[in-house]
Image (cartoon, rainbow, N blue to C red; front, side, top):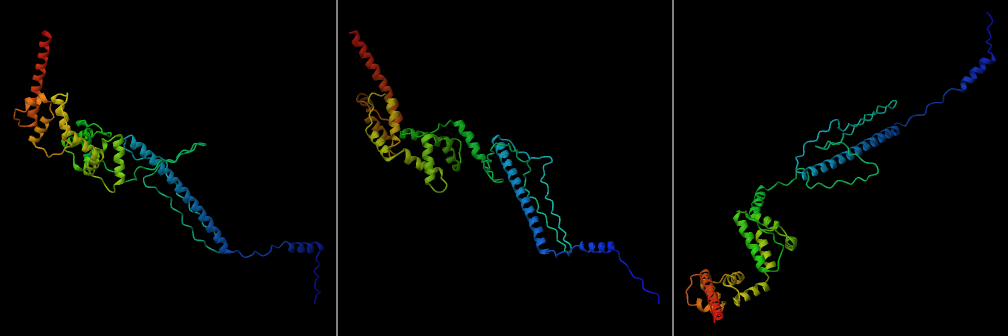
Length: 336
């Protein structure tokens, strides 16, 4: 049996083997799959929230600019055309790619859809550095809630311009207040104004103190006001009891004095408006005669009259005759 060969190792080989054993990497610790998955979900959620917030801010800015444009166009009476901005479209948010963990399959995160504002596609508002951008004013009416124009009211307003009704700013004279109220009623009757529009027309002709008074009346009343309510409140304001009492007293004790018959008749008819309607033609004729001058009343009392107008006409003739007689007598005295 041949002798066994002896393996002789050199020192260099032994040193190389010992040195190589020192550089062997340590074992890899186990990876916490739940912690890694939570980190990935938090990062994706934060990215989605930032994208949604940016989209909402952009939509609010676009809506504010559209409101300003609509208000400017409405004040100029122009029709608002649809806005087409070339190349301005909100880019979709890119989905976050799933993170692949060794040995674990992570489901992809669904992307958050962009916020779409219906009918609003406007370029972003240009911000000037260092200049404060004031917020736009609120819209007068919400979209789709613009009130319709009452064509009947517009027609009545155009017709009122033809009747030339003066405005009313308030007065302390019951006669002036009555004249305006009577003139208003005649104008509304002339144009055949509907009852539901009479109050709107009356309000348009109030000015100054009268307008302030009517605004106060509306604030104190609950619910809608009617034209009848306006007339009742108007009478209480401008025809108080003490004023009516003074007018009735003046009608009972009126006198012609130095005025002419026509001037006396004008005042007589004005005072009659506040004395009531319980007078017939005979009462008016008797009261008118009682207030005439003595010389003129003596001539007119011997005639029968059919109406107050008949008495006024004949009294005016007698007055002219008395004036001529007085001039003749003065001329005769000068000649003597």
